[in-house]
Image (cartoon, rainbow, N blue to C red):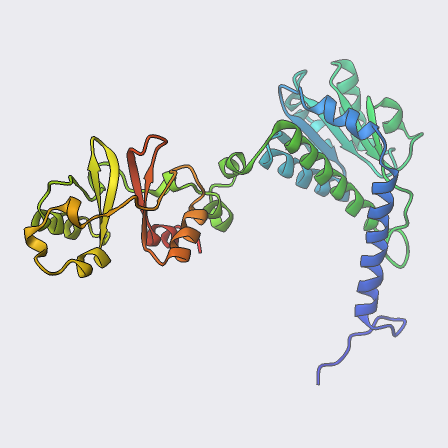
Amino acid sequence: MQDTVTSRNSAPAIETARAVLRSESAALAQLADELTAEFDSVVAALLPVQGRVVISGMGKSGHVAAKIAATFASTGTPAQFVHPGEASHGDLGMITRADATILISNSGETKELADIIAHTRRFDIPLIGITKRAGSALAKQADHVLLLSDAPEACSIGMAPTTSTTMTMALGDALAVALMEARGFDSTDFHTFHPGGTLGAQLLTVRAVMHQGDALPVVRPETGMGDTLLEMSAKGFGVVAVTEAGRLTGVITDGDLRRNLEGLLERKAGAVATGRPRTISADILLVEALGIMNDNKISALFAVDDEGSLEGLVHIHDALRVGVK
């Protein structure tokens, strides 16, 4: 039997974990309730920024600042983290008049931020402060202030940055999402910044992987079935498109061949093909195309434009190859 881990006061560790999570959850709910219209002002100040949103903080606030900068950058708001210590030794040059800054300090008195604050005031660079103290040096210098709720840290000694960093990170997420919505940032834009991995695969469109041009199995309605079978075999998709003047008029699958075995080689492709075939737009998500193939128990789909002209073919193996399941 597995032993239960206990803390020094003999309470099970899981109870400590639950207490921490409940404490931080309560602080987030409090922060949501206490959020003011200043949040709207911050979003309005960040939207027109032509450069980058430079985010900085010291210690744990610095780690949070780097995460917020990464979230901004991946959701349509160019951003970067600048370490306040490095800023004092030359990296202030990374902060330009075209930028805006977000400085994070729970106390609002972090001395390492002084040079960045002075730089923003000297060059009239927008400054947004995130702090718990409304009367702090940071709050007094900032153009806009987002105040953290006065909630206790979740640790037993009430000193380690826990609740405060959780609130700050969540506030950064709230800003990123609000900016996303204000910009109309959608899944297509998201894929631009996340081309790799499973997430990238889920956001691929059919156009990104479909077969085109000479790779397509295509015949005309008057093509004999002997030549049609050669085309199907050569292209290897188990299906062939029947087109007239570039428009898809029918498809021939293995099933169509089985249903027309008698006298097959004496017939023409147009007579064997299934008319009005199921098609898709090349601009739908590949995961949607895979769903259509699974629902209809087919292995390939032809993509056509608004006029019905053939654009490409996607096979179920194409989806599986790039990680769409």
